[in-house]
Image (cartoon, rainbow, N blue to C red; front, side, top):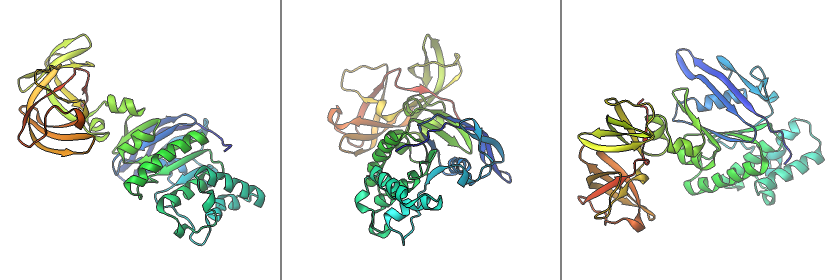
Length: 361
C-alpha cells in the first residue's frame, strides 16, 4: 500500500481540566514508521495524548508537529490520520466494502479508484472474501479487521489506535497482536497505540512510553524498559518484580554490596550509590533460581513455599524468605529441582546481574 510516512513531535504537551492535570508537560519524538505504544494505568493521560494528536482534544499548552510543521491548530479532518477505536463504529446498514470505502466517498474519490483501494485494503487484513457481508454477520475479530481496513484505505499519514483489542477474548487478542505487528511491517506506517496491557505493549512495540498521573516516567524499547526499569513504578507496572530494600555496605567497580536485615547480597550495575545509602533493588520472578542441593549462586536465601501454581511450562511459587518478605518465583517446571508443596523449604539464588537498582517513587 502506497502511503506517506511522517515523523511526529509532541512538545511539552499539557492538558488541564480545572485543577486536574490530565497531561503534564509530555514530550515525545516519534520517528517515521515506528510502532510506539502509550502505556499506563487508567487515568495516566495516554488516551488524552492520543486524542490531542488526533485533534479531538485541544491542549492547554505545548504543540504537535508533523514533519516539523505545526498541526496543533488543525481540526481532525485536516490531519489525515487514521483512527481505530475499541468500539468498531461500523455502519450496520452498510456492507463490509461500503464501510471500508466510506472515508473515500466523503473525500470525493471516484468509484473505480474507491473499488481498487477497498479491495487492496481488505486484502491487507485478509477479508477480501467477506466484502459483501454486513458487520453483524462478522465475529468481533473480523469487525476489528474491517475497522483497520477502513482506517488504512485513505492512505493516512499515520495510524492512531485506542485500545482496539480490549473488547476481544484472550485468544483472539493474542492472534490479532501478531497480525497487527505484521500489518505494521507490511504497510510501513507510523502506529501510535494506546493500551494498559503490559504484555500487549511488550509483544508489539518498537518503543514504549510509560505514563503515570499525566507525566512521562520512562521511554524506550521494550527490552530496555523490562530489563532496566528506572523506578519502582516502572518495574512493578511493566511485568512483575520483587523489591529488596536495604543499605549499601560497600561500593565496588561496577556494583555494590548491600544488606537486608543482616543478610548480605551483591549487585551489579551500581549507578550513583554511596556506602550507607538506601538500596532498592528490583528482581524479576523468572530470574530467581530454585537451587539444587550443593548449588551456589552470587546471592542466596532460604525460604518456605507459602503457595504455588502450575502453568504447564512453569511453576509460580510464593516463597516466604526471612528478612526479605514474600518473594514470587517463576521457574520452568521441567527443571525445577524440588517438587512444589506448601510448607516445603528450599533455597533460592540469583546472580549479581539479575536484579537492577531502581528509584523509589
